[in-house]
Image (tube, rainbow over all chains, first blue to last red):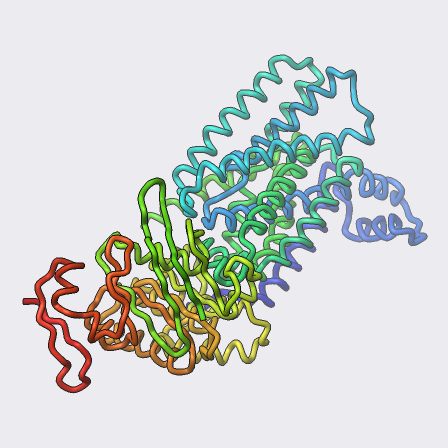
Amino acid sequence: MRRLLAPRTLFIGLGLACLLAVWLSLALGPVNLPLADTWRAGLRLLGVPLSGEGLGQAELILGQIRLPRTLLGLAVGAVLALSGVAMQGLFRNPLADPGLVGVASGAALGAAVAIVGGSWLGGIDEAFAPYLLSVCALLGGLGVTALVYRLGRRDGQTSVATMLLAGIALTALASSAVGLFTYLADDATLRTLTFWNLGSLNGASYQRLWPLLLVTGGVALWLPRRAQALNALLLGESEARHLGVDVEGLKRELVFCTALGVGAAVAAAGLIGFIGLVVPHLVRLLAGPDHRVVLPASLLAGGTLLLFADLIARLALAPAELPIGIVTAFIGAPFFLFLLIRGRG
Amino acid sequence: MLEVEALHLRRGHKAVLSDIDLQLQPGQIVGVLGPNGAGKSSLLSVLCGELAPSQGHVRLAGRALDSWRGQDRARCLAVLPQVSSLGFSFTVREVVGLGRLPHASGERQDGEIVEAALRAADAWHLCARSYLQLSGGERQRVHLARVLAQLWPGATGTTLLLDEPTSMLDPLHQHTTLQAVRDVADRGAAVLVILHDLNLAARYCDRILLLQEGRCHALDVPSRVLTPQALKAVFGIEVLVQAHPERGHPLVIMR
């Protein structure tokens, strides 16, 4: 079978697409910045002394609004795509997605606990809140990942049906718990919770960004080290063991990376579905399933795709803004159905 | 060299394997025969460390099997399971290349070994195909090539365990597969192979272990194990055993 793209071509293409997405994300919005202004304001942000008409305003928009939002989009997309790769490797099934098997809902529940609990305690310090949120979302995600994994495995084999059904049940359970919190919450908390359930890059700030960037960097550095072990794991757990892979250790790392990545993404941008399903699939379709390619390519493609989805969310109904979770679900859900139909045929 | 002594394996109250003594010698193929549920696959699982024995010890090159570091072990012990489930579209060359994972022999040498292993399993012509497009028998040969690549060329000190490597193969490839295994053994590897076909076992194995309900009914050269009495007792079949007219090994014929 010939692969559609050599890894090199793929990386060049993805790099260019990513640059384009970043530039569009910085330049487009309610106030359109001309290309030149975007560059010059960007340079000024980096400390190059430039002056010009309207450049101060451009710098403000760029530095305070669009740059953190763009970075948030890149990081959320990248870490969700990596989590998707990790889950699919863990379950040895290309249909595993953090959203579909309930990990994201678990993380959202953790986040809701942090938000509501925080408001009951009379508010949490601004600088500290994003970290607390991330940790709670991580714990929620970790709990669900471990549970789905226990439920979906029997005798070293994954039952996809059980995995997806367990995901449905756990999603329902987590959603009802979030619903309970919504019911109990006051008006301000309610708004925050609703925002979480739909997902949005709106209101990105550097404070919310830091924990996510830390996690994304960590996961992006860690997972590629285990690329070959992940390849071996796709053969089966005992096969991987016979090839010298420490399977139990690898599985723990995968569960942890998934929960960490999804937790941080949910804490920073709410529930954004299907990125973890669509992106690794597209990459495998283009360049094959070797994790040495799939991992870095998914990182790039995830960030790029999420930025484009965010552009649609921002521009489709401008000046109003769609929650990005709706956009990714519109792209992702039909894609999932397509995979189901194709897998049956 | 892989050896077990006084091996017992229980699952719940049921004895799956009782009192098995076995040594896999360099250069020899030991065939394991027995009816369904006799404990053949359980024996293989114990030998490769997937199942811990209830009593007795498994030793690889004189050292307890569970004291080996995963990667070191993988360099001298390879296992071919009965079925492998791989749901991702790796090319055949990539699948076989995974067999080189425990080694740090470099891309060029790995490429040569992958080719040699694929040729030995008569699957070289499939090398650029997607694994998912292959038939069951072709997949089986690809996995054989993978474990051959893992131990290539199969020098003294390496051990190969195979669980029914011919179950899905056509008659020609049953023989090419076992001939490839024979070649590896002739280069010094110790081999254990679970088989169902008595005549294949008679032709390619140096010794045969006949299992019955988890016990060793016989362990000896084929001509002493494959007797009408033993096959009647273990499998419940009536057979004639004659010498192969050209090669001399026993030939089992159903009556």
